[in-house]
Image (cartoon, rainbow, N blue to C red; front, side, top):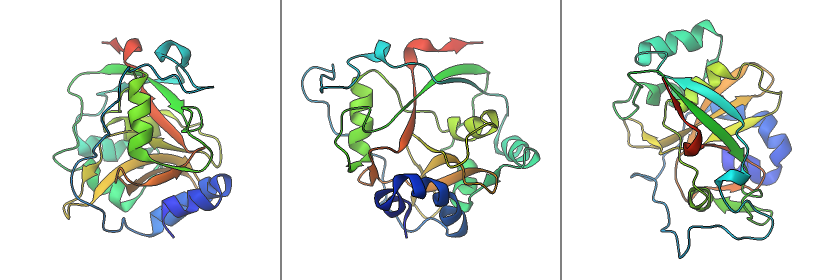
Amino acid sequence: MTKAAIYRCAPWIGAAIVGAVVALFPTAAMPQGRLQLPEPAGDATVSVHGTPKNLADIAVWKRITLGTYKGVNAMRDALDAARMRVGESADEILGRPAFPYSKTQNELDLVVVTAADLGFPTGSTPVAEIYRRAMQLGLELCPAEVGPQLRLQYANQPLGEFQHVAMQPIATWRGDLVDLTVGNGGAGLLLLGGDGNGDLKLHSRVKFVFVSPARIAMQ
C-alpha cells in the first residue's frame, strides 16, 4: 500500500502507520522531472470562502535554524546521534548533489497548513494544487535542508503526527523523485522519503510545512 493510499483510507490511522510502511519499503518508481506547479490564474489573492486571504492570516508555527551542519556527513551524524530513524530514500537524497546545505546559519519561520485550511474540499487533492494555492498566499516551498533540520529541532513531535515538507523533490540516482516527511509513528522519530510526484493526491487533513518569507531572520 502506498503512502497516498494510507492517507486516503484513513488520515488519522494512516498518520500513525505511514512511517512503518515507508521505512520498510524503498520508494517505488516515480515519474521523472521537477515538480511542475500550475500557473496561478488572475489575482494572487486567495478568496475561497473560509480560507486565509493573505499571509498575515497564517500564524507562524515554528522557527528553525539552517546551516548548523556543513554537509551530508555532519547531518547524518547528528541524526544518528539523536536516534532519529531515517528512511532509505530519505537517506539517499540527503547525499545527492541537488540537496544543498546552507553555508551560513539562517533562521526560517515555518507555518503548517492543510488542504482543508486552504479551502479544498474534504477528500484528496493533488500536491501541486496545494502548493499553488499556498504560494498564492505568499508562502514559499521549503529548502530541502528544512526536512532533516526540522526532524532534529522538533524532538517533542506528538505521537501519530506526520508533517509533509512542501519542497521541490530531489531525484535519487535512479531518477525517482523524493520529498520528505517528519513523523512520530510510536517507534521513534522519523525522517521519511515519499513520492515527490506533483500529481500525487493527499487527504485534505495532511499537514504541510511551508516557509513564511515575510518572517525570515538572518544571522
